[in-house]
Image (cartoon, rainbow, N blue to C red; front, side):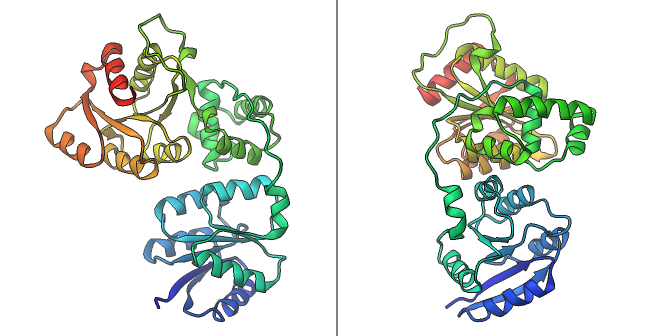
Length: 349
């Protein structure tokens, strides 16, 4: 039987030693490395491919939710078991939705941790029993998702990625005070009290990051009749063109929920959450690669129909796009409201 390789990540050497001793009692399991901070963890993961990561959340230089998302993105097969003292419900929810396979509380018996490791290795999920009453409750009615401004959506996206207020301010070229004021209004609109609750809200209601087509309030145009919401993702690092194509889509499909991303990573994260029916992806994404982006979208949302768009209708681009899973390749200069209407009708019906 193949040996299961485990990576331990905890800033307390005595805790790592205790877990290592426990792991050594499990047949066909070995600890291949130990780390005590975030940078060391990422360095090890760049050179080794463990089967299971046991990770504490309070290590130095480690942003839990943001880091777990990055780790999950780069290591989709590796199992992740969080071993933590934190039992805050929004925090646990956020990490489970970020991609961890289990969440174990440190105050539980070591025998439970041993069982948790065995369950995770076997492909099951694990949550400490004392957390279940907090996680499993009466289902709340789905709230009306508030309509946010473009700036508020930008801030929420960065918040979801783990940016602090100062980092958001730098990214958006705004003052920290402005960011704080925006967050106060956002919290009020979402009816949440903290950053963690806001991230939890986004994970549960990803529509908050989109905009209903009819809210663009453009001139009337022949529209595509639809009894149900259509989710469409537009991926382009050119903000001017991104807004242009969104406006055209809003005219012909006013009931569509429109989402936007300006990078491959952002597109993949959105696709995992919203599972869009249709995605328009620019072939050239700044320093990124739109074709690789299409592959990532297809991997995380298999039913999404991808249309590649480009200002450079190169034959090789077209071939690579089709190989990546795209169903069409369009020249940007040929796109107008009429042609987009035909594309959406053909793709979705």
